[in-house]
Image (cartoon, rainbow, N blue to C red; front, side, top):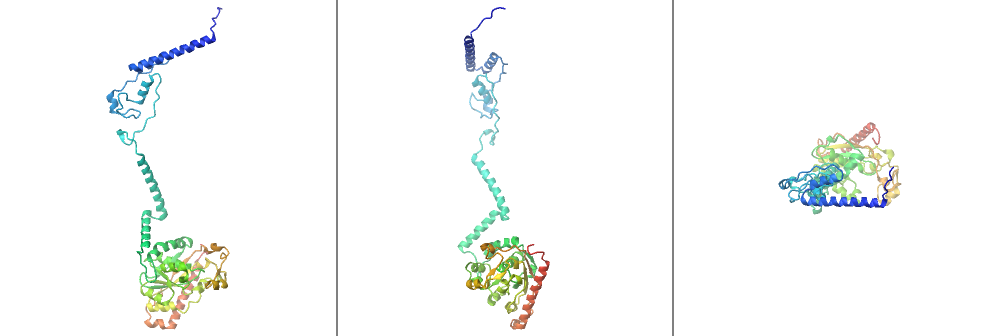
Length: 424
């Protein structure tokens, strides 16, 4: 075996590093020379052969006319000059062809088409705002129950008339527009959702002309009168308004006085009632008064005395029909288990109720119980067949008063038998 030639490790390393450096220098010089001569494709083949790789296929260059006529495949803009063309070709020319070009992801054409103009950011923002506004408008329509823009415009117009005083009230202070637009809107959810009032016999109220609605009174607070007003306003085919006759205490309270006047209520006196009936209004009266409103829970649905029959005399004078009205459900909203007469005298009230929740729970005790209500209007009792002097006949007035009272009482018993429960 022949002796092997020993090559020092350091010398071999320097030789290999020097050879590789000279090879890289020669390859770089060749690439520069080829790029200057315009032979990028040939240089790429030579460099590939020197590195021991397969030669790259030469890519034909596009003419200047083709470059100016259309954008390149990577989304370039035509007419960039003699050195234009695709980005891949430009990268190959700059790199000398020794390195394979990595294709860039294709860009989507702009909405402007061949012009290459990018979309306006302001237009995109405006479109986004419009879509959000449409979505919010749909939500507002569902919440407000219709075209919300019209409702807002109507509300602004209403406020303008309120501020400028461009609205009308009658001599009793009745504001029809405020009642329809505001007061009824506040009472309607209580009527429909909280007490779920069922209305019967609303067609017994005449569509035109005066009528006197006589109802029982209960519930500790006069909420039954307000519910009867909503029943006539919302359920009568002619959309009539119920003008209630209220006690003088109602018009002595600061805020309640103004609201009662605006809602069309007036003092329970024969003169005001006769004036309204002669105008063809629907007038409501509750002859029990505070005796029925503040009676104990043990006497529920037992009608109290109807007074001396002044409402019958008024109906006879104006020759309007009397419509009996029976309300079931109001007796249980504030079960009155006691009456503090001392506090009533100190406060000037006819009674001071004591219920299972008031005054023990404070303001929370003023929330009524959600009972199920039924309001039934009975068949009208005509008075136009009596002579003009019939209002001065006390016996006739007493008989008609007793007839109305008995009609309401029997209707209450009938409705109580039909009722499934207090709350359903």
